Image 1 (cartoon, helix red, strand yellow):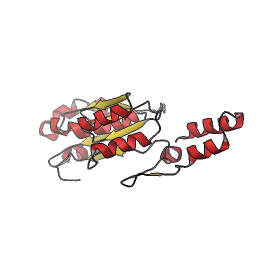
Image 2 (cartoon, one colour; image 1 turned 45 degrees about the vertical axis):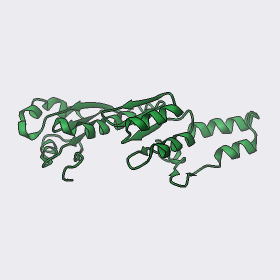
Image 3 (cartoon, one colour; image 1 turned 90 degrees about the vertical axis):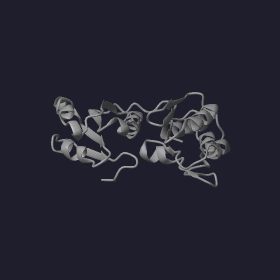
Image 4 (spheres, one colour; image 1 turned 120 degrees about the vertical axis):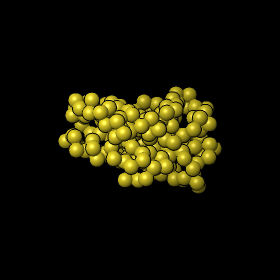
Length: 207
């Protein structure tokens, strides 16, 4: 439940459209809903402005579906590290679910348009780094940010990166995804004045 829904609920009580007991029932699951295998943080959107994200890796299809069923039927929902089977299960609950296959992310409903200024640039070293890069890019977009992508510009052919000096300079923040030695993040950090977040690809050494 988010701040907007709580305001609506209070207005309904004030107008008499909803009784006090009904309102209490609606609020009963704050601040979390215990499913036994998971405790859903139903209060997070109210506290932070963004609802709890379902991290699907390690969960069963049935567990993911059960979580979606207990969340608001008209709310925004994001699920990461989801496979096609999980997507189909979520879509059976919410037919507005959209699967971003490259990022392994399911988005349901519409997120808030935060009107953020500037651009987050997501940079990847090689093609094999793109799943993690897309995960970062789609996540940033879902949170209301403008995102640009610059892929396959690793240090093995550094001229590919240097050809995009203007794009790097215009970014407000940069996420660099690189496997192998992770050298790309250090190089990008030496070229720009904005914050640079380094992220290793799956199965690569962490840096």
